[in-house]
Amino acid sequence: MGDVAVPVLLGILALAVGGCVCVVWAEFGGPRWVRAVATATITVGGVLRFFEKGSRRGSGRTGGDGD
Image 1 (cartoon, one colour):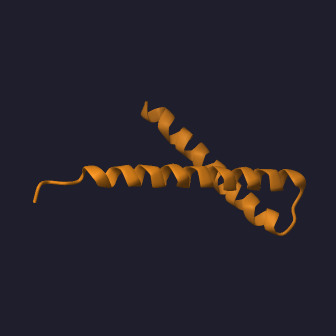
Image 2 (image 1 turned 30 degrees about the vertical axis):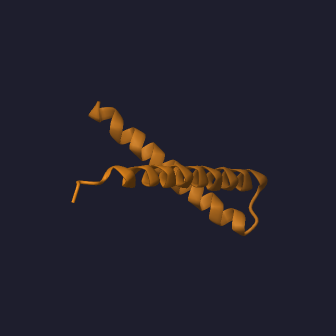
């Protein structure tokens, strides 16, 4: 299983870096496909932030130790 994890993580890293490059390139104009990839990258980032906020909200309610 460890043999598969490294290439998968490198692929995810490459997608993230490529998405960031497209966001910067789209700010300066860029072709239509770059603007589409930038929009998708920003949308995925917003969705991830939404779910991260939800998981943080739920985790604070179970931390009481009875003091």
